[in-house]
Length: 403
Image (cartoon, rainbow, N blue to C red):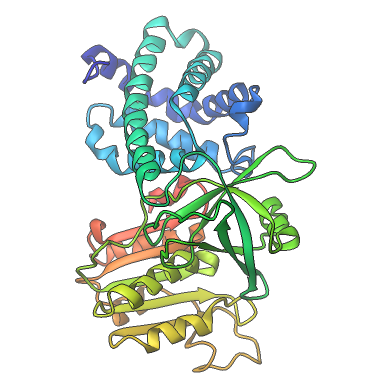
């Protein structure tokens, strides 16, 4: 494989940017329609992110446009490449899957752009696609190797049994998972997620990512799942997953995690079920780095949706430099300020500026896209360096990146 793209390819790909801006979403939807004619390829993807109302087509459209716009400055895309590689590892994307995507992408470009998609343009996009594909395949190969050779690591899908179910709130339940084979599990990086392959009667295979919500222990994992309205996987877990239920699980993945040795104060910001990776980070700080100043700030609707409150308070109480601030958007009459929550309302830029060390802290954020759009933008505009803002989100990144 060539180590660089040809000048002609770079020029042709950049010349297609206006067409991608006008027709990119149509191209991506056509590409997925072609790919999903193959059931094996279709089943690799989380179908809840697809369709007319899905966010994955918009996210991929933005990614393709970003690639074309930065084709002569690929270093700018390094963080996105790592994020994609981690997602692919979670979904168990392998080198043999890439040709299917290439055929679908080039076929979609031709179908949507018609005569404007000349042989030269299609050849340029083919070269550009495989250049990026080989970068991803190489990075994914390293990740797969590291996971397979680590203590407790594995490749592919491993059977885990539900050991315990805990009701954390009216809408969130935790599931303790232990491998059926009785062996150890690879120690995840706090903040990472597991990918699940669910076989739900009456449905094609379902893939979902759930953040690991406890510190690494080498034996089990905990996930804490919100029952989503009309959520196929979350509803099945809440209704049908009991102690003894066996689930197929891929190894931990994700580029959002706490540093192995935190060197700065840590601020953990979460909305709703976005607290799950934050609890894993907080547990890890409490166990392994109790000297690190940490501020846990969490927002939820009210006491009925507030998960793990007592657990977080107990962890904070054991830290000399730990603080927790709980926000209830609409407290109920039975929710008591100072006991159940600290602030009525939402986490906002004024509170962050007044109550957190914006000049020195590492910020970790997880929650719904509106939550992230507001707070990532607020931190950036407030002068927090981009390398100190770390975030995870539910589903593809689509318009979040505009923040």
